[in-house]
Length: 260
Image (cartoon, rainbow, N blue to C red; front, side, top):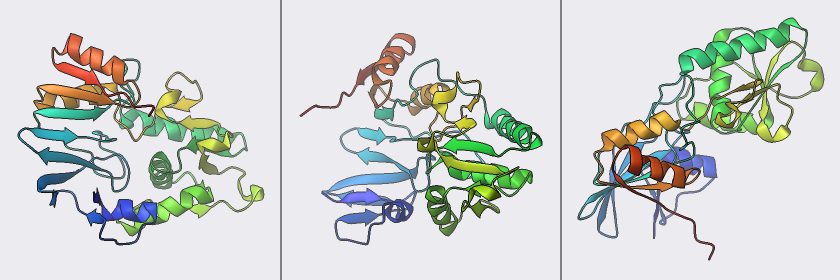
């Protein structure tokens, strides 16, 4: 079975062109085994797509998505469907994030606090996704040219190759260059003073900046999709399915991963 993906996703995965790969752009269609598949922007990370599949009924699979406008990337559009398969990464009511209009100034304020103390303002985020957003935010703020870890830099280069403007930044080389600078490192480094992920919503040193839609965004998608049946996947799939059934009155089922 062919793999349908965007050219940006192909680059991120380091894949070469192959008869087994069907490369599409948002808004394009592909025919797979006689089935029409529409590709649409998912707004999650560079190249992310959601799909509408035309069977007897229309099926939409969102994959990871984000509806919120950001400093980089276009937000996802809500696709209408008879059957909706939607991600539930933040599919619990506790995960409702402030808008970017509040989060961006909060990030800049926290960075300035550390710099004023004479130390590095270390921000931890996933290397692919939030780190590129942070690069653009800090570059635009003009506090100081941000420094990014090499693992983040390699993704920054691909974002720029595909037309995303991240502004000016430097690549982390040595500890001696970090004083009084904003520095973006991978979450796995476990050294971030400012932790930028949706999971840090209750962390006083965290900023709930995520490349996924929050709970409110997920519910908005479900409500506006027109779907008569909803399947939830990943994360809080069970909690979200129960909410959709009990609060929205729609038939909803969590899709569990098989252990086999």
